[in-house]
Image (cartoon, rainbow, N blue to C red; front, side, top):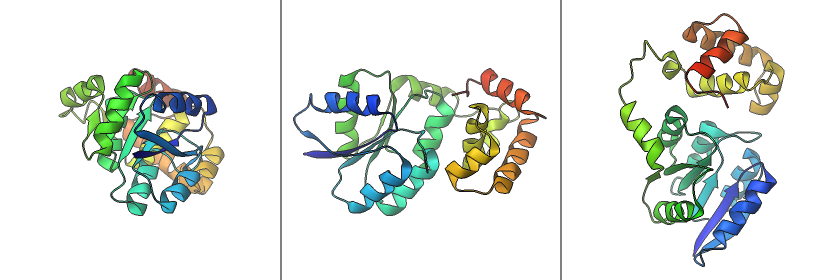
Length: 210
């Protein structure tokens, strides 16, 4: 049996995933988590074959959560199921330690096949995302400054363009408002923008807005 932990903050998504997993008799749902802290708690409890992980949740999430899971359970395969099809996000997830990446508009059969492949020690990247990763493997950094952002800066960048304030971001990431403001200043400098409106326009131009 492939023992699976589903991690997604939307109840309707978890319900849909339960129905998909029920289509394959060897897939067993053993837990659900709606935020990063619950993920870490259940990973620590052990006895999992695979973590099916959303990239954006309350608490630790995205690249940060993948790295924490890798520290807690180095051999636990992580399959990211995300609403984001951008190659930059997928690339950072894989680099952080995810074994697979596909988007939420994938067919149920594709998800089941990806779960089987990743749980058995393989890797899986959705073909469309893989193609973008391949053709953007050698980008001109001078043309895409967001590629120079650290993982934390990129995480804060996405939250800022999603409309989150500095204080809200600090609470979610367990950082002080001052630390978030420092990251905000640095990432804006790297992107060559002076205000939030320009930051949002940059995100839209490069298809990075959530």
